[in-house]
Image (cartoon, rainbow, N blue to C red):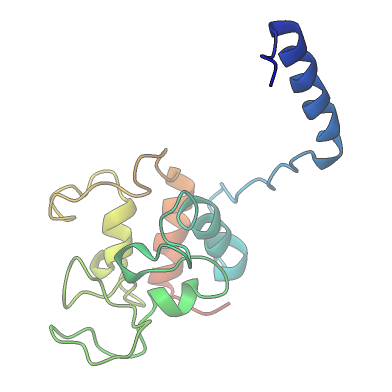
Length: 161
């Protein structure tokens, strides 16, 4: 086997790049980032969760960090409990109950202040997060408008809309 010279290596790299030209990555559509009066889960919440939380080996079907999948179509069922998140929840997974804060719902419909999801994405909630890191971990935080829409959606009862 002959060693590849710098010129030959550059030519191979150029050929490889040209061969991939037909497979250009399509940019993702912009995420919702303006405050709306009545946010819809499908239109304003789920796209943010999908793009910001279920990517980067976090809350997707492969990794299921903290037993949580936030990719479509599972996100709603994973976040919103059908029953109570008592200390020893008997709800079957996905149950909408926090692994980090036993007894707390990830989303408590009608009560954003009691919702663990809000604590995890709010930059000013270090104490409320029991010292855990701001989510999404190691990435830019959600924008104030995205957080406001999540809070409003929860306050309005966290409808499956």
